[in-house]
Amino acid sequence: MKKYLQKLLGMSGGTGKPSKKAGYILVIGLIGLLLLIVGNVFSSTSKQDPSISEEIPGEVKEESTDETMLDKSKSSSSGVKEIETNYEEDLRELLNKIQGVSEAEVMVNLNSSKVKVYEKNLIKSQQSTEETDTNGGERDIEENSEETETVLVRQGDKEVPLLIQTKKPDVRGVFVVAKGVDHKSVEKWVMEAVSRVLGVPAHRVSVMPKN
Image (tube, rainbow, N blue to C red; front, side, top):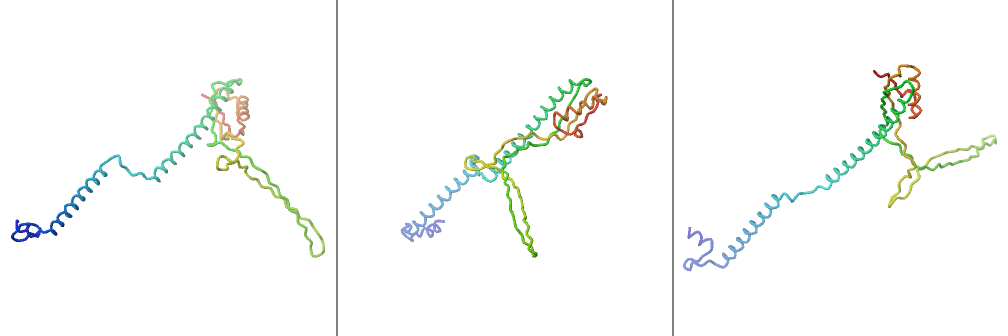
């Protein structure tokens, strides 16, 4: 072993001292080994640290968009449900005041969204054309056209349609259960009351006697 180390360090046979070249090689090797150890230590610390995590902007943005759409959907549904409940309560109170009607219960079914009405400009145009046929006859042709254009207003750094009205959802159907409507005259009164109050045609109103 001693002879191997002497050979590795380039020792001269009698002096037992390593050559300068061997010393340089040994120092460079030790520095490289030290850098390798330090690099491994920092790499292991980075992998094991739970506070270090990679963020993926695309995924975060997509999740935020989905949550926003879900919130809007919930808000719209709750608004329609609130209108239905108000209609049902008002009709129930009204119908129970009709002569011969008691214990009335009402269910109102509305469309799923409100109707927004925007301001529009009506643009009319007229074009007249004179034509002469081969026999020398003349005739005038007038063409009229109409088109609408949504009015835009500036809001910050962008233009948006001018909203002038938000209509309540249309009524798809009404179901009434009450005592006394087995009499034709009473049933007719209930049908007429619901139709006029909600502005819904009679064929969308169902009236049934209650047990």
